Image (tube, rainbow, N blue to C red; front, side):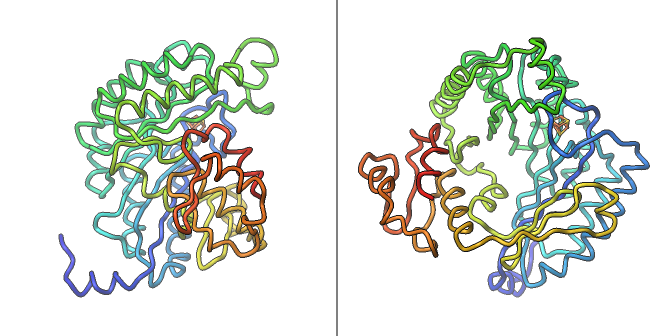
Length: 377
Ligand code: SF4
């Protein structure tokens, strides 16, 4: 259905906003995972969804006068929800917000919980982008980190998803034992041959308080060294770019037109409303975080984070330099980059590039972005 010219002109006056919904449930806990996610019964999931629906209805007031440009259902593993559960959430969004007809609507999914029925349901509810947690295409590696799927299952499910969805992203982890740059490029080759349009590459982080931390300490798991991880990332990055993708953010690669609009909104410091435990929101200059436990969340506990002008400047620089959009130097209120010796040096060396007020990081230097960014503060 198309909107009338009146609705379109009314929307043209509105500010845009994004919506994030956090589904904390997973079928099992991966050894490396430090996210706020856990296994739950169907009844526990239903209770959480009821809380979520209540929060969406209550906080939708914050988006009055705004139009939703992207919806992202992340987790956890949103694909563990059944069709009825998912439909309740999607309807709550459409009933409470003004959403563009062509809004980007992403669902995160893991291969083992993707079914034909769920795909049909998502499609009917205007989902148009699927992000699949592939992580590796090496069965030994997948098993060691506690993933439930195999290479074969991942490939079968990707093919199934691609029958319904054009805009499909896959996550890969860089740094896993046995997955060097050559093997990762091989995975990328396979994924591209299946029509994947976007790849997110995450560095393996080993936390002490998760099972992988203990495995590493006991010598039962040997991740790639830092140097080999960086080399593997570079090789994978080069492969993806040689094959037509753009590295539009440090960890994200996409064919033209398939960049994640939702993530770009975060990096451009656009407004977003987050629902569910641990979800963050940024609306009307106010930054809030929902409680991390379901019991506190049920009580409506929210904390507010107030950034100082300096912290806001730091965020503008950091987010802008992490992606290929850069940042507008005139947005900075407190930090004067003209007085920073590193800034001048980086411009002279071509590490930073300035066009008018726009400052960008030369993508060749993404691998040392942390050092560069911290030298600008
Ligand atoms: S599927 Fe994702 S969120 Fe769930 S346990 Fe594994 S890494 Fe964590």
